[in-house]
Image (cartoon, rainbow, N blue to C red; front, side):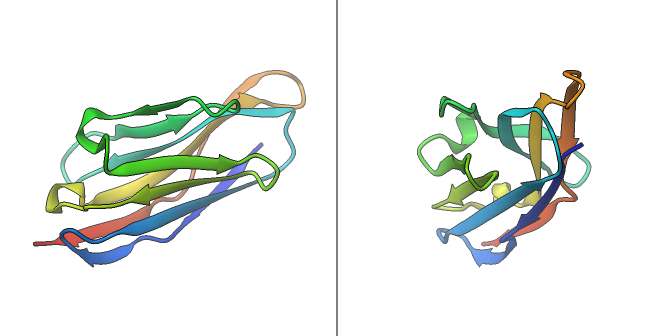
Amino acid sequence: QVQLVESGGGLVQAGGSLRLSCAASGVTFSINDMGWYRQAPGKQRDLVATISSGGSTNYADSVKGRFTISRDNAKYRVYLQMNSLKPEDTAVYYCNAEGLGLDRTAFRSWGQGTQVTVSS
């Protein structure tokens, strides 16, 4: 299985920037899509951005033009650069990875989450 550990969250003023990192570890056959999701208090967990192993990206409309997702396949890391942050970006951000285990069965793993708070 794959374990994911996020870092880089914190408190920032509106208009500021943060960079989240997620490190994947463990033994697996492949990691395909990786991504970031977020969950604000009292709300469901929503997609922020995803990136395939080939580098194709997908963003939520609310973050397009402000957030950039990237990954380093050699280091099994995924990043989220967040610029022009708004108070409504405040949430716990979760790293996600999907792929195939050594037995070729599909898996989906989540990190423990990192808090991002944007003050107005």
